[in-house]
Image (cartoon, rainbow, N blue to C red; front, side):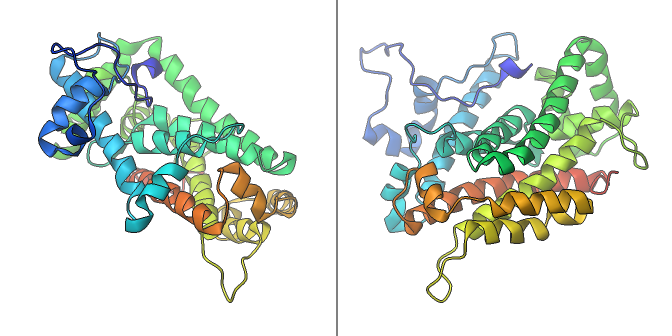
Length: 334
């Protein structure tokens, strides 16, 4: 199932019938009438041929094209800073964490009108884990907890693949009980993928199979997702604060900003011992200049451009996940 999606966009090597290179010219890229042509000839999304027909693959191709356009829109949202922003979001040599890769995963997450694809969602977390690990061993301890959560959902997805027919039947049975709009989205998902393809398909299947307990702790995907969801808000707020311009001529330390973001988010869900351990991790947080090197920028202005772009993408993912959990009364799972 996980191999059915890819967030990498590759330039096709197959030449066009007229002998031109398949890579579009600047004129073609700027022409709205060439959208489908550019998608068809330039973006090769790695979907297995067994999934869906031509219409499904065409929709997938258009989705990939839109993701690339969205990346350009995000980077160009500052007007005059557009060219600089696009340059800043390129790969960063010598760094394990790649902000450009994180952004590409985040942009691949939204699906349909209000759903979240789990494979790119978890891939986004893989990159965020690398980000946390780069901040030192103390902060890296937090990333280990995150990795345990992503592993749970991935393992559930693998187990579901062992009996796909039964799982698919469960999806359809839940579809019949959902709203008209929700039913259409769920059917779209179930026709091409398994129950752990998206957040909403996972919620529907786990509710139907009685895997979600609203009173006791379980290892359900829904409960695990909620923990990741809360952690994502913490990182979103931290990056948002790190991107802020100086107040009264002074930039607050990353340690102070991360502690403040934690206190406003995760701290309310943690025990006293966990909160104390987190405080120690934040004390060891690197200085601001380290973050310049981490994302290959020269100053705070450039850092703000990069982080604000990432924060905007995280916000879309967070809001969609929040809505899915809220719709099913899962914001307070034990």
